[in-house]
Length: 196
Image (cartoon, rainbow, N blue to C red; front, side):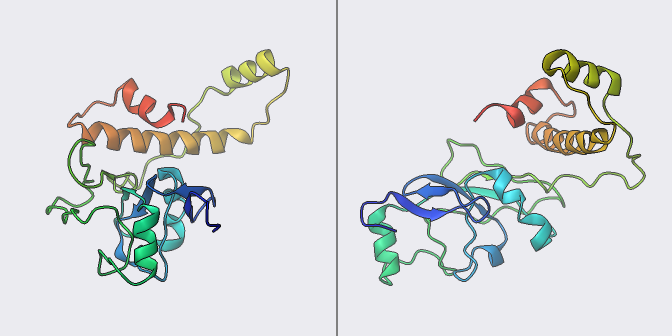
């Protein structure tokens, strides 16, 4: 890192720079935030990429703010350590999550003090007997590709598209449940696919 650089660290997944005082995401599991591992992610999507490797039983992404250049320099010099696990944080006001039912995510409103916890993978496990069927109308999808781009579509793409839809549905269900609803609405999907 050069003297004039605004880069604090790089995303552990995509290697995109995370700037001082910028927003980043950390894993709620303590082994991922120790000094030796020190995983930081630029987005919830990047945080999700480490889940298959780490195989956490229950985890969520924690939205945090990177330290200032001065705080980081003090930490590097061995001063101003704020956490026992040496994870750099701009604030030490993080409280331990309250006891909750299994698989119930914790989400803290953005205007509340401390980091916002964004649950992604901690949703209810789907039933084991859910059929893995194609979730799109293949002929309509092929017609869209053909009319818009003049290309043909292989039948082999529909398994992957359906898997993406299942993941999107799982995350939308979590968003609806976090709002205290038992009905998934259009805004639950808009929350996931809005442009960055």
